[in-house]
Length: 415
Image (cartoon, rainbow, N blue to C red):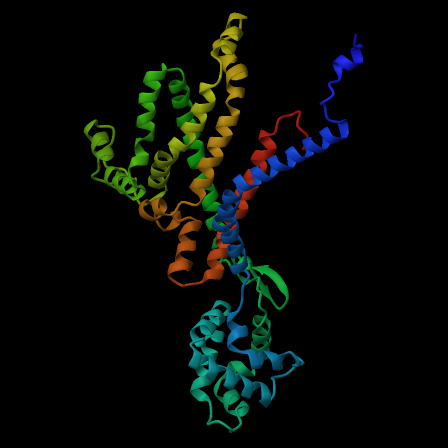
């Protein structure tokens, strides 16, 4: 009769070391299959998301115009003492560079880049080309007598600085800062713009988010308490605005909110108003339209969270003597924080980058950062300034995600 040890250990069982090796091989195979399945998504993420953001950040500090148009001049300025106006070789090199830039089509980009610094610098290349003597003749004295700006050492210092392939001009300008003679300071009161625009964008996005929470929370709560058939039918009305173009919805709000529109006519017919309110081309129209457009983005995540909350918890608190409002505040409301924060974050991120609605319904003082991004992209072709302002939005979004991750982290999970 075989002993117990022989019965418990079959002869075909692999050795413990061989079993561990097989388990590790199985894990490695599972990891490889998972990576292969995620590889297409990873490629799309890199090509469609990370690469454009990297290009965005690069363009905000890129400064190739002066270095491309004036290579010989900048090479000689490297040995310049910076104390007096450069000599004849620098002027001759500038003449050759500008002739070459005009023939290759780089002169426009050079003028545009110099114009970002000052209007005086912008006019120098054209003035130099108009006053150049025939080839082989001295250049310095003729240019100094005809272009006073070239007698200023600061002009040459600025040109030498602009020859760097990277610049902080766009980032500093996006925060109303300027570098002058090595000192960082704010621009003048009449020139400061972008900090006010950033503050305005944050205020509008914050108000829209607040209004969406105030309107969306009770509506989502009411929908979550409806029977499933009725709730699904009512959700169709919540999703109905998605079936209409954003421009159409914005234009319809212009029709409704104008002086002779439906809203003012209804209020005047009910004798609530004696004269129509100005609800378009101002902040009021922007807030009303953006709240209506973005409200579903808060209702849907909030409804999903509320639908998963067991109503018996609240009923148990009431049965134990708690007032219904107390039970709602201390039992039900904390369970909806995840939905509120997720929906509010989504609404805020979408609102801060809005362009069409403020452009159509707002006035000059209601335009947000996206308006100026579009202006620098399509009108002035200033990619550096456009990407610097876009980077402001990127930084805000990343900070919001960081705050959301900190707030939504469970208390028992390590930081």
